[in-house]
Image 1 (cartoon, rainbow, N blue to C red):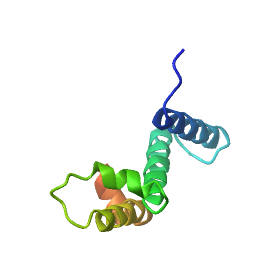
Image 2 (tube, rainbow, N blue to C red):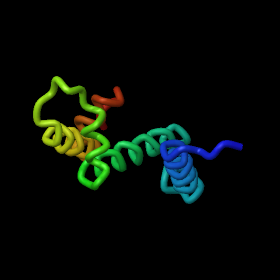
Image 3 (spheres, rainbow, N blue to C red):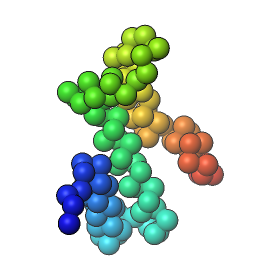
Length: 98
């Protein structure tokens, strides 16, 4: 069997964590499980923009864009802020506001 690449390993770990949270009573409904998986993915990706992995993100930006490292920092901050601010998160997920 082929080895899973890093993205799929991360997805498996985040899925197991979300399922454990549901089993432990931290998540009220099953519809929250995929939401928590995506929250973990976006948080991990956002934080990764500020680690040595930021150089990998720079490689993904097309050459026409200037200040690539600044773009990496801004997008990483936006990913984290999008999770922390409920109004932004609810619009992004098309969920009703509480």
